[in-house]
Length: 123
Image 1 (cartoon, rainbow, N blue to C red):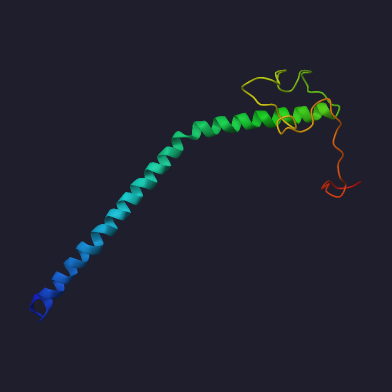
Image 2: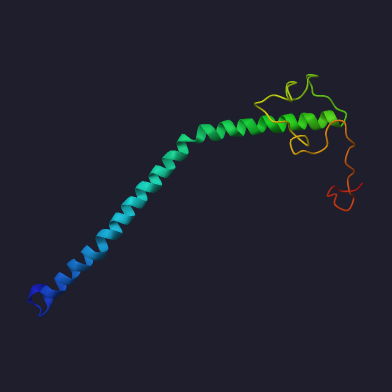
């Protein structure tokens, strides 16, 4: 029917050219993008063991810092041992707290809190 209209065959040719010029590149971009996103999500699954390991390490550090904080405020850890197993100078674990940041060492004076910058509620 379209071929019997004046200019019909030309319209078909124009449609084919538009499909070749725009349709194929758009289709390629969509396919490559989908493959990239799928490969990206597969990589995230492979790294989940590293994330779980890192989370466990951070949880251990938090527990050590809480125990160390309790020790410095007069409390003791439940086992009576040093919170980090007694190896503050081990090569695998840097010292926690002020020593790691180059702050006051164990023999220096404690820092005085400034009431103007203290965020804790007053009693």
